[in-house]
Image (cartoon, protein in one colour):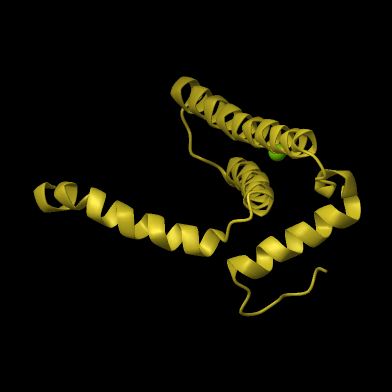
Length: 125
Ligand SMILES: [Mg+2]
């Protein structure tokens, strides 16, 4: 780990996250019963919501600060925000692994769907 891996795609990233989770949180992947699955699903839902909350809280604090004191979105805040986006991404990877989905395929399908869905905004915008 730590080395730069070239030509990595989302499948590789999902696999790396799963390997990490199997190593550090093996119980998460002991899915022998529906209760096991639901426990892991709840764990990932709470984790994801928590990280979205951390991100939102930073946005709230940044907004409050700028509204009251003025100033810019400084590098310190950008760093914190990027850090929370990374945490969110990790939980999305874990959720996708648990649900046995390929995020790249799902993304491409959804992008196509959204292109069709939002076409009217583009035409009228
Ligand atoms: Mg966080």
